[in-house]
Image (cartoon, rainbow, N blue to C red; front, side):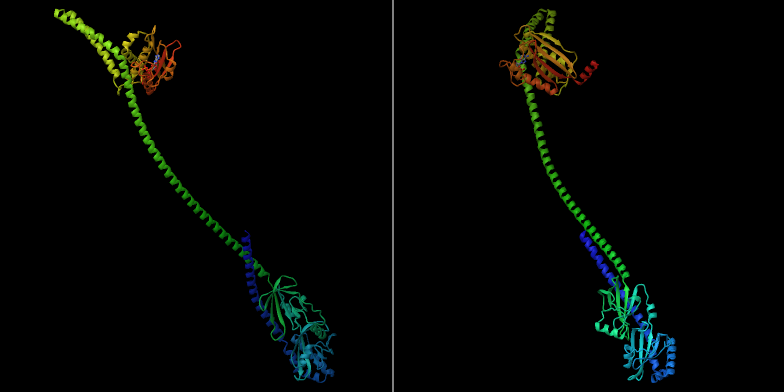
Length: 604
Ligand code: ADP
């Protein structure tokens, strides 16, 4: 801002200086023209009277006067002639001096302050004329202190003049023509004294200091009639050219001073013109230059700011692009990582699926093994079960042969009926065994609970016959659970089998089977009156291969597999000891969908 202000100030001052000088030059040119015109006017005005004194040397009356200065008639005639001439020529006074400088005749002879008889030897114009030259002189009259222009010419022989003719001209009309508002016109004579001025107060001042000897001489010849001749207070401000100077008049505003010689004289014309217009123009130019510079500088500043913003924007864009590139690179890296992780995950999922399949296979294998183990356990009973009807069949068929031989067809028929019943019973046993040992396929996903219990009890019939427990069966009729029937049977055979194992050898054995509906589940409790679960058995109940039974009787897989099956269908298996003694196993079984609706319907 400071630099801006300095530049604006500099431009303003340069503009001021340039415009001021320019205006002054123009003003100077105008002044020169004006000066020239005034000079010419003044010269011609003065020249108008040049002939008057010379004219007198041709006149007889004047010659006669010079020849007989004491003759009163001649003096009278000369005086009248001079007065007439003075009136005609429009001059102030015309008079004639003799060779010793005394006034012999004058146009103002009638006035009381007439020059008649005055001694004007001391006047320089007298001396000039006596030397045979035309005298020119500006002076202040000694009698009336009236300033005027004196012209003198020798009378008679040029080399030895008999007298001098003098004309005094008033220059006031010229002065009056110079009155101008903005200008001051000064006419200085050979002594540097202002003899004419548009401002009367400047008259009879000097432009240069007067040398003491000159001042003394002036006092002697009374050229200015003892006027004090003070020096005009004119200080030079600046010199513009040889003829033009910038000055201050009486500490006023600067004025343009121009000088010109008045042709044919030792006089100088000085023109002082007011420079206020030039200053106003210069101020205007300075203001314009300042404003223009400020505008240009602001424009430059704005352009600079704009350029900076543009470059910043470019930089920001580049940074953004770089950031974008980096982001893209990171995204690509992350994507690669992710896809690698994804692939790994896929691989892991595949692995898991394979492992699951393997597990399922193993589980299925284990289930099958568990079933076969149960079948193995049941095999003694089944063999016994089959042996009885087989023995009966052998006896019956032997008897039937004998009855047929005897022709007792009726008895044979009855025997055959019994045989068919026995065979059907055996077929049922093997059928149940076959269906139990069968691997679960894609068969039914629902099983009626009653049927599953019937099948399980039928398979364990031999054991039931052995233990002979009091069987309490409180099962809600028509319940269908969402489970493969084969697997449900396997669970029931395991749990009821365990209960029968626990009951064997106990007094008053009792086996309770009860159902209890809760929401979409049916809870089936299998309770025995055996010794209950030992502490160790409780802790390790669902551990594979945990058994307390002698080798060959238990594998320790029954509960593990049962819990696994129930877990798979969304049910559960819990074990507890009943407060009244004996173990109690509770199965939570999800009901089949239609069953749930039915149960809910009943409930409503
Ligand atoms: P296993 O019957 O082949 O021994 P299980 O897994 O079916 O295998 O049973 C594990 C053990 O749990 C049994 O050996 C037994 O000690 C105990 N147990 C199971 N059911 C009962 C029961 N109802 N009463 C007492 N103990 C039981």
